[in-house]
Amino acid sequence: RDMEVSELEQIDKVVKGWLRESRDNVLRKIDTRLTVNTKTSRRDLVTNIDKENEKFLVAKIREFEPEAKILGEEGFGDKIESTKGRVWIVDPIDGTMNFVKQRNHFAIMIALYQDGQGELGYVLDVIGNRLLSGGPQLGVFDNGVALAPVEDTPLANGLIGLSGPMVLNNDFNMVDIAEKSLGMRIYGSAGIDIISVLRGELVGYISYLKPWDFGAGKILAETVGLKMTTIDGQPLGMLSSTAVLLATRNAHRDILTIVNKD
Ligand code: 2AM
Ligand code: CA
Ligand code: CA
Ligand code: CA
Image 1: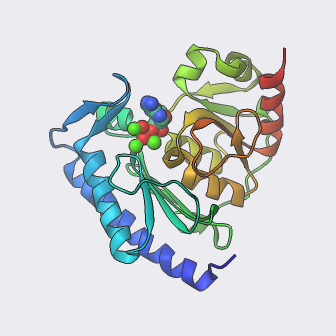
Image 2: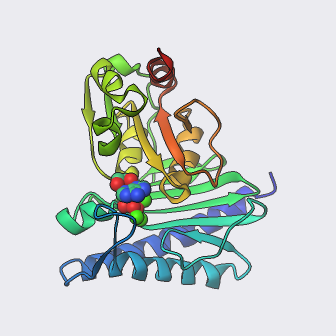
């Protein structure tokens, strides 16, 4: 690894400052009239605040590191074709449907990769004011306090976070996975689900995701011994768009068994 701990600590302070400002900006505008547009379907939304927040974060990253490559969901970053060098990944509002309909249960996420290796991840529950942060060299923190070790709970002894569409279509035997667990939860924000898995409130989370949905969570999850792979159990590339399985080691094994049966 060629990133020094001292450099990571310095970047960590700077990113936390951006996130505080970003959260303040969103909260200041949360009761204003939103401009909402659809993307690929009526359930796939983008608002003016998603765009404004991505522009804000991209400008902060560029000011801090002019040569940085940035992958942002709403397209204000760069076209990323390779994982070489330093790549920042930004999801300015994760859970846009929740944001629009509930003004709650959404997250802001930032990840920093170097040569395809996760260095720093940030998942901020905006309304809960809870930031999960860190990486392999710094450790993982929950609002600045070292995260409690995550128990290796099997699927049968925990709650599982799922994606609504995957359950409705019974993709990958999702109904059997839900049946085997103590119960399913459908929160509608990858960031909120990832925070719940990190905190041991869910034993796992399964959804179709893009790099900005899982980039930060993967760094944090792997640091604390959770597994994040494709639903086939294959390694998840930094630029993959696929069905993602995040779980404790035991629940990961239990879920793969159900996915692969028949
Ligand atoms: P988003 O809100 O940033 O788009 C539930 O919708 C979760 O899946 C959210 O974290 C959402 O992120 C993500 N997601 C990924 N692809 C999506 C799509 N095509 N439509 C809706 N949500 C999507
Ligand atoms: Ca989106
Ligand atoms: Ca997202
Ligand atoms: Ca988003």
